[in-house]
Length: 130
Image 1 (spheres, rainbow, N blue to C red):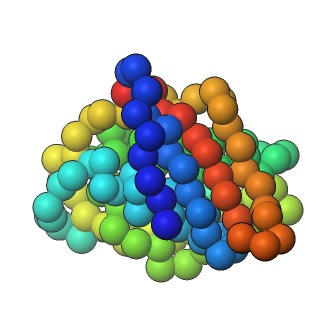
Image 2: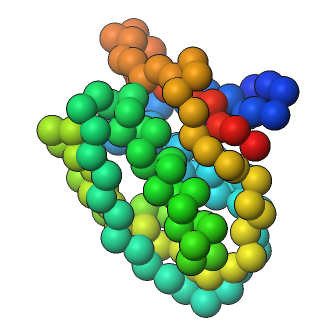
């Protein structure tokens, strides 16, 4: 589950998920919602990002999605495969070429957090500069 919280010139993405991998899946779903594009030629993209901390891995993941949407007009729809281990995330994304809104300027470190709550699962917070 994800929800958006508004800020001045920013959007805060808040995620609740059952696993760490599901946090990244929810982030992709939320980002795709922001792009708001209906469809086009099918595309598949391989993606690999690395970071020392899980929260920074989330920033790298979203930053790569921003890049793909701007540089290749790629609108992600779903994750075909996802490997998450040792500070590295590898994924195969399915989506399409479209005309996505270029709403997100950058993924910030402001209020960045990714943590596990033993009772309630995984949580994340990341702010996007729009």
